Length: 142
Image 1 (cartoon, helix red, strand yellow):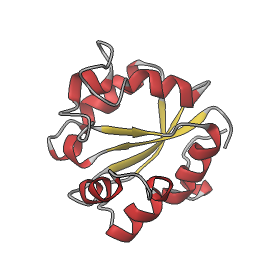
Image 2 (cartoon, rainbow, N blue to C red):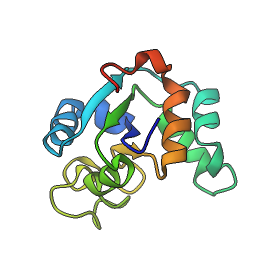
Image 3 (tube, rainbow, N blue to C red):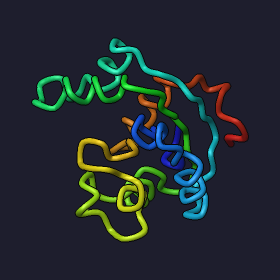
Image 4 (cartoon, rainbow, N blue to C red):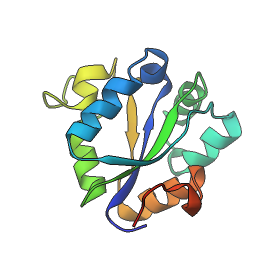
């Protein structure tokens, strides 16, 4: 995976509120191309492994509970400088601090129920994408 790819997850709050289509449309309007997507419900083990980098943080248990509370939608997105571009498109973690027109400003409920996950580095994007998808799953990837 190059710096043209990143991983995002439409989280259970947004997916359960039927906001996935609106979020995908907004991301496509911002120039992203969906290269892989699936709907799934994470087990506690999967969520715990995916968010293991936060294991020592006070919000870890709550995050795992939230991410297993309903269906979510992991996706691999393509765009030049994808990680930085996606983080800009989704906005600040707290929707009250997010810029107008960002995913979180439009669709997040709160800092804890913030609609969407985005990788924070090219290295993490590659690792996180491999957590959900095989290389063969990337449709149309160059």
